[in-house]
Image (tube, rainbow, N blue to C red):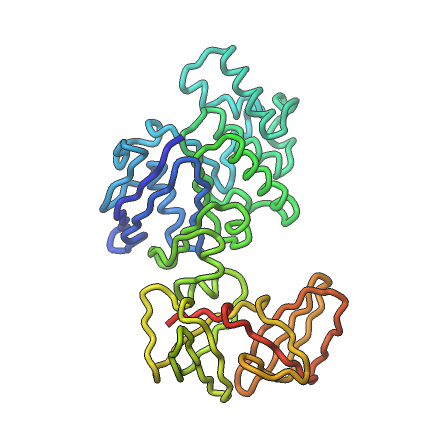
Length: 359
């Protein structure tokens, strides 16, 4: 397998900038995801790696080879499109064999490779089926087999699960990850679905308006977001604004408009952010990190408020608690505990290590 490097890559469409200064190194055998909302530049970046677009600035390297202006058919990539792009007039076997036929491989070699690819995606025995005889999930697997059969150095997937229902999407997600681990192929995946990205990826690149916001492991992206956009886009988060009251002994105290004080750890300040006493600061707190405190309990980072919304989901109990002028979302795993109702007082404990300072 092979690594991929985008060396300060930008792409202009006339006077409109599609992506700006993308500088990343994707390791050999890595499952790397481009994540962001629609129009953020993730598919444009993928298409430059595939060779469908050429960058306006920068270079694209596959290992030591500069492929910046190499046509797609010379890049040895496999690609799965959002709409699968299967040929409806061909059988499953013929669809999967197409890339091998273009490469003028022998009939025997084609048969062996197609049979192996169909078995890999659990479609052995489906070779003579027409595409319109398959379910959406089966069509997606045919598209995956067609991409893998040519034994690509790099596998590119452009939102391949977006046309599937929720249950099938989850099943196919597991299958794609299984295949990637089994084959060890360098895989670049595009999605706007945070759960997909978190579950499948070794690392994630979060994008907004054509610009990288953060690159890191799912744990780094979720637990230590670089900025407000990442904190709000990835999962649920309480985003609160207060004033730095004190910085002392590796701890930061923040006072909020509702006149309650919260203490966090200085190590949880976002990169390239410097905080000083008296300035405004935004903080992020994940709802699941908040704990229920005992009614009589007092101390640092214990706050009380009235339940504004109580939501029982089976797996968890979710609350929105009104604390002065602010609202705090919390999520407690359902262990048979009491469920508080709207208007009741709820005491909450916020661990210092769960307070993340965004600047």
